[in-house]
Length: 314
Image 1 (spheres, rainbow, N blue to C red):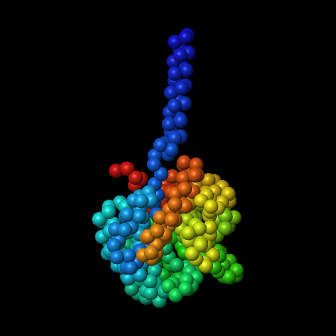
Image 2 (cartoon, rainbow, N blue to C red; image 1 turned 180 degrees about the vertical axis):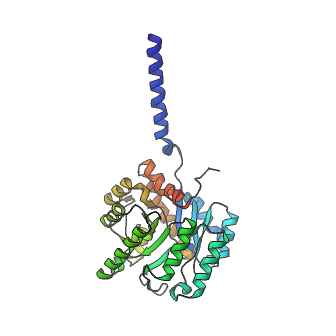
Image 3 (cartoon, helix red, strand yellow; image 1 turned 60 degrees about the horizontal axis):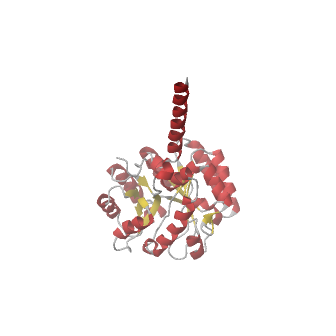
């Protein structure tokens, strides 16, 4: 009888140990990041600076698209030189998109069929004027340009990244864009859609979309004090000091599977001290979240949605 009781106690404590070990799996592993959307232009003369910045800030992978006069083949070459660190994304931005030229469709098709890209970059729906470096863009969801990019995202199983700056849109137009966004979400319920820059939405607006649509996600780009302090645009600021605001923190913990870390660098200067400063905010704030939440937002959700291997896996 005593032997049986001792064996039961031993098995009980072994069970507790196994459960504790399982619960601490994330704690025992190093937190790393996947930047799910960034860009680089031709003015960054040495693209290896990107890898250097990533190494310094625990960004293990970056989904990267060309911008400005940089050629897509240069992104491919970087991805091949640093296999697994850089994931090439098909570019959608540019004059061919804005002018609805045939070149835009030809390029999308060619790059999709090449097998050398594993993502598609953001598609501009509403983009406010940004000084003299970025023009206003307003395109509707049923536009053939948008549908062409969406079809490629669906065919390849890539999340469709939507660029809508809701806070910059006048009220009635804003309502119209929200309505058509939700219609698109309902039309493709099994396909993931991600709002870059948090869609410039407030926590209650993000919650409303999350609770109504299982296929909506939020990219955290431009939602930090570094961006807000140097811009006159109505970007979301998810921070109080170096921590998340209570509203955003609560929402991210409750729906940790819907938030995806991203920086969305664009110009050459973004890959310098700007990058380091932003990552100081994000690194600290995300690390302060519960372990499973932190890992999901920092890299896990991107790995799941873009079918990216976890760090260290074969």
